[in-house]
Image (cartoon, rainbow over all chains, first blue to last red; front, side):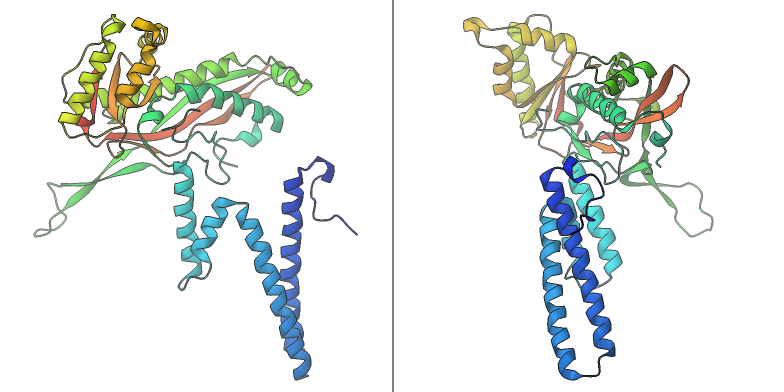
Length: 130
Length: 267
């Protein structure tokens, strides 16, 4: 068994990072499988075989959703952004931009730095005893 | 790489972690304004102005029979406080020394915090910023040197705010000299003055470097608005064989939406 999901030496990683990385790897595998089943079904002439593959693909979708839910539960900001994108009608890109802007502003108001920012992340301090 | 150019500095990841942590530690207690006013953002370095939600008539219009107005905005200010770190100190930090000499960073942190506090409380006319203290229409209540009278002064300020329909909690910013005086004082029976003042206010009492005297202000929100572009960050300027030249930087705008929500307490 390989340990490819770790980009850094596993022994140096905290347990929660290793778990996070395992679920990231699992999410990738489910997504790949979904794509593979889609291709197999596209070329398979046998209806019964296609039905089995469709059923199996459904399982992969379910596992993908469970993996994603796990990862988002551990990243509150990205969960908030995902909530603005997933299961919404309309323009996906627009929802993405809006959800990110709103979530980042709320996060910033709590004193967190912008994602990717190099700031010290001090933000507002009202009501803080820091 | 952002305009801070941190990737160009001869500073390791551990070195940046040390500098960021030291800066955060020094800045946080000194940023008095942020403990009392509304904070919006950070909106990033590219955020250049605050929308004031107002427009003014223009005398000229490009075409007769067409009215022209121009939106009013408040341009953000950029503050930058340079400092220098000897390269030997950064090298020793990598070796694990516990007492890295970061005095220059500490001084820069206090300078930029003082500048921010001063702009918010006393205003900055060149930047179009009106300060909390200068904008207040209330009569000043002089604190004086007799600390025993401070509860009375603060209660009077709170009463003035209530009479003007300004709800609490109320916060108190105190310049370093007055703040020290308050900390050192116990009233009859040994009850700390600080606690007594806190009971009157309901809100925070903050140490406010660069504030002359103090001010009581409402913390209900919506009265004093700090609009942050880039939050305080460390950037890289240049380096030589002996030292790395860095700076602390931020951009912000500040406006007073309800001048009557603060009472000045000059020393």
